Amino acid sequence: MTSTFLAPLVHPGPRAPRRLESVSCATAVERISLEPGRRLVDAIDDELARLGADSAQVELLGGPLARVSYCIPDLCHDGSRAAWYSETHEAVTPATIVGGSASVGRRDGERFMHCHAAWFDAYGQLRGGHVWPDTVVGTTPVEIVLHAFDSVALTSGEDSETLMPVFTPSASRIGSVAGTRRAVMTRVRPGVEIHDAVRKVMGNADMRRASVRGSLGSLVGATLLRDGDPVSVDGPATEVAIAGHMGPDDAHLSVLVMDRHGGVHVGELAECGNLVAVTFELLVEEIES
Image (tube, rainbow, N blue to C red):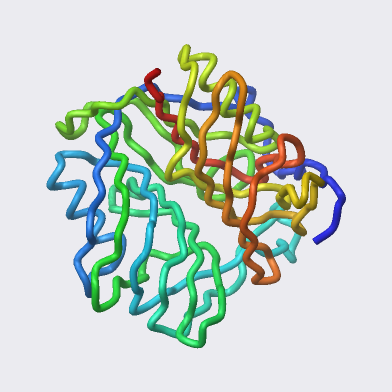
């Protein structure tokens, strides 16, 4: 790690004028044990169908994985994009989930997920990265918290600004889930400080206190706090999963960070120095006073 704040990435496409794309909704929140032996995305799909929902944010709490197919962030060596992915890796399994987040929606009409997670592999090494849909639940259940949307569809497609595949929320009445928590689902575009994004979403929705759960994306490096001092993880892009809360007098966003060297970092995000690199899928749920 270094102590240098990193500059925003310069993307190849035209800059979109709207930096936050938000959809107000409600969420149905359930803790669920996913069936062993299934692809992770298929097991989540079954639970969405049971609830009558089409899209969701997911917190990965723990459990074994029989297969982990993943990549880590990388430089774009041909210069066509600001960042890219490494080759696909296969973890030494069985692996044990440390934590993570996933967005679950559709790509080309088919079920798809965007997932960042960390795990211990079969050798006890801490690993992490961008987890592909071929990842499989192990011999016992994986525990998750599912935040299913009552009126949001998440659709993955190529973004004209970054030329990268991203999830974008849209208002939808697909499904019949009964949401009980007032929430906002937001796609955050590049160059926005993540704390600022949370505050802007809360302000627009007139939320005094809110939680951030099942949220993930990429930051330009990541600036963590160590003994009160800011310390930066190397960029140009890091994969992250965050959770926390924000109120009028306090803000705490904890983070799992997977860097382009394969390192995994855990800590508290600093107020400044955490610019979105490519995209961020941000779920903000109101905490009632």
